[in-house]
Length: 271
Image (cartoon, rainbow, N blue to C red; front, side):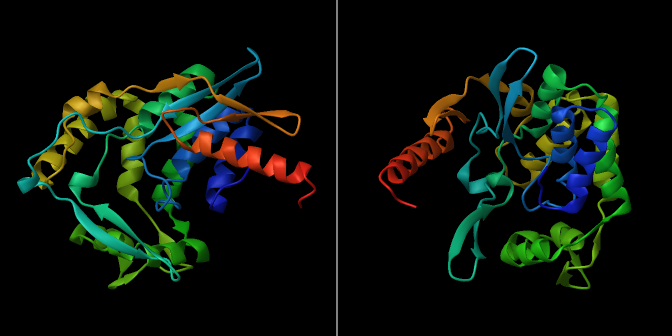
């Protein structure tokens, strides 16, 4: 197991030790990561999971990536702002504001994967994330550094500053980060299921916030979201078959191309 924070790894390890399978562990880690690794992971985001089902000898991909909202808002009322993330030797422009928000897929993806391949109850898989959010997690050196890179995002609004700063400064290594509201949200999710994010209280709150603060998202977007199951892109590499993310994602094709170049380089005597 590998993750960006010890608490995330512990969540997966504990699930495995209790008899859960690899998918249970991945789901527990995915939700837990939203607490200590919030720069990388968010319940308002999305993703992909490449799954090998040993019982059916089947490999397939769950696509629960974010989706473009169905309708565009009038640009005159849109909140869509550019900020610059400073990586030191290079900078990168990102856009923030309610108008930058896409339709989230993580919650539907979590439930789709659990229904297809999970074994432990959803409430058990959400426990590590709930406990981490309620009790707090220690900020690591890595994450403290990441906060400085995306500081313009973490300090963009009064709400963000109240959440991600202490005494006017960003959270630093060694600080304890807590998110009790997130713990309450996950407890509701464990009880109500994915409906909470498609048409329930949280979905309605997201739509209302989007309307109020200049976003594209509406309740129709959240209701219409569907997880896609896709056949992987299979590419040979040094006697193996590598399963990659298929179109419409571009990453799998790019990795496959890079592997072909690497294999050709190795065969020609390169190191």
